[in-house]
Amino acid sequence: MKEPSEEAFNPVDISEQDVVEAMKRIAGYIDITPGDFKEVYQTAYSLAITRLLDSLTAGNIMSTPVSCVQQEMALVDAAHLLAEKQISGGPVVDRDGRVVGVVSEKDFLKEMGFGETPSFMQIATHCLNSKSCMIGRLRHRTVGDIMTRPPITADSAMTIGAISTLFAKRQINRLPIIDADGRPVGIVTRTDLAHSFHDLLARPKP
Image (cartoon, rainbow, N blue to C red; front, side):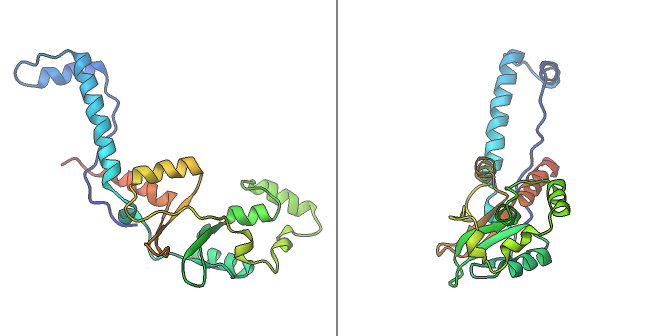
């Protein structure tokens, strides 16, 4: 993930007493009520957050290079690759290198008949009580057979505010970032997004 270089903000919920005390500390006469002051502050605060969320883009926080999976790759090989890279999923590309889907642990589990979000104990219980392993369903299958399509992608100019909204709305964990030809140039994961917010919060005010 690239290091953000924008100004930070500290999200603090101010009280009326905080406002009154702040007004006392400002030299000179201020012809404004505490309620008006708080309303102005909260409005400005909201605008500042929006500005910050729009100041960082996918290009600033995406991870590179991207670990991609070939559409025609056998599932056993894809599983080995994901395990080796210690990632839970990634973009699927065709022979021309264009993103055509996304494959993740959820796709594997769904194909095995567990649904998208089984617990470890559900999987363990099934395997302990079954004479055959459901992983057998994945033999002789390819990534293209189980991948999620069409892929949800974005370009590098998409803001972190828009990415955050997209993650929540579409319930996704990763967003391939593509160029004009549809080829991957990076990927934004929930971890990348969380780190970007953490860095914004942690940076001292100028």
